[in-house]
Image 1: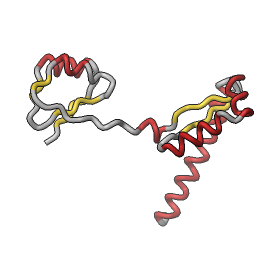
Image 2: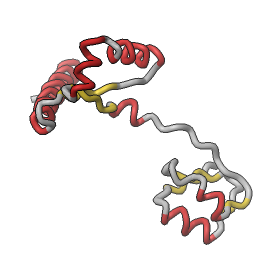
Image 3: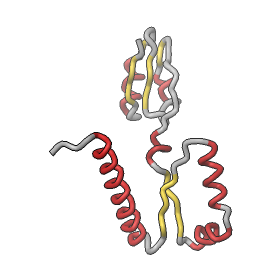
Image 4: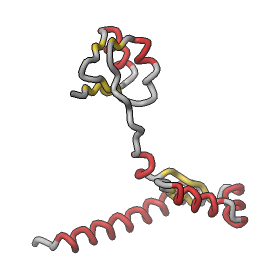
Length: 131
């Protein structure tokens, strides 16, 4: 049976909501009763709203007592900073400065030395070349 796209999307959202609630309740049981709330901060408005919630006296007391804790949601965590493409000769020393970024972006004219390539692999960097 094929569903209309609107109905299919609505069902997906409902299933995700139910799973999110069930996993949150399961997490509460595993955390010794502490509620865990997922926070998604994608804008200044989201940040301001989160801060306003945290400084409320009742919420602040729950946080201090360990009854409430927060975890960063996937949408905010997935936002990766833009990485500028490197140009020229890329040496092992230049690679060391990129270890926290997760990737190495090479410009069209970039030359990667063999030691730099080995260092990038050791650091787990994904090597991308821009044309």
